Length: 413
Image (cartoon, rainbow, N blue to C red; front, side, top):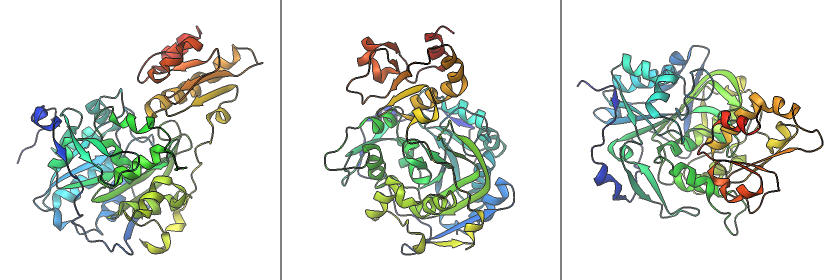
C-alpha cells in the first residue's frame, strides 16, 4: 500500500480530545524473560549495520500485519550526528527490519516547545531516509490528545498523550544515549515523554515537591508515566551520544554502538553501564524497577555479547550546579523545562565570556529560569515566561522558550 510522506491530518481531532483511555500500554508481543532479560548490542560497523545486527537477534515475526510506530528522539531542530537527535541510519535500519517482517511502519514525534516537527525531521536527516522508503512521518501534535489514567500514579494521576499512540499496535523507542541535566540520563524510558501532547511535557517539570518524598517530582512523574507508557521494544542509538550538559548543550561523544532489548528498563540499565553510570543512581529507573516495571540489576541482565565492558566509556556527568560550569554567573534554576534550559545554556556557551568581560568583576550576573522561585535577588535577569512573577525584581525576558538573541539584546552588546 502506498503511503504518504508526512501526516498532517486533523482527522478525529474532536473525537480524540474528550477521549479517556484506561491504558495505552499493552503486553509486548516480543519474547522476553522477565527474570533475566536479554539485551543485544553491536558495534564496529556503521550505524545502519550495527542497528540491523542488533535487531536481528529479536524475533520480529509478531509484528507481521501490525502497525508499528517508531519513536526516535527528534525533539530539536538540529543537524544529524550532533549527539542530540537519533541518527537517521539507525531509524532507517529499524524501518527496514520491521518492513521485512511484514509490518506497516511509521515514524512519529512530538518535539519540545518551539520546534516544528516536520522541520526537525528534515534537519535531522530522518525525513530523507523515510522518503527513500516511502515511510509515513507523523507530527503527533496535529491531532488532539487522549487522556490516559495512571491508577498507581504518585506525582501525576493522568497524562495527555498524543492520540496516535492508541492507533498503533507496537511502539518502539529509539533514543540517543545521553546524559540529562534534570534526570541524569535520557534513554528509552524517558524518550516516551516525547509521546506527551504538545506543551504538556513542560507540566512534568513544574510539579511541586511531594511531601514525604526526597526524589524530585519530575523523576517521580516519569516513573508514573512508565506505568502506562512503556515501549514494546527499545533501540538505543549510541552512534554519537552526548555527555555533560545534555540533552542538547553537552559534548558529542562517539561510541559507535547500538543496543536493542524488549525490557526498556534493562536496555537502559545496560546503556547506563556502558556510560559508566549505575541505573540505581537514575531515580526514574530505580523507582520504575522498584515498582516492577522492568529490571535494572546488571547481574540479572543477559548482555549479548557478554563483553560489553570492552566498549564501556564513561560519560562526563551533568554538573550539579550550572554556576560551576559558567564562572561569573549565578544561575537560579528551579523547575525549568529542557527548552528554556537549553536556550540559556547555548546562550552562555556562545556569549557568556563576551558578556562577562563587559561587566564588573565584583559580582556575578544572576539569571533565573523556571517556575519554582519563591523570590529572586534584586537585579536578576528573569528568563522565560515562568519567571514573570518576579519581573519587577530585575530585568524580564518573556518567551516560551526565550530566544537567545533576545537575551543578548538585553545587555545591549
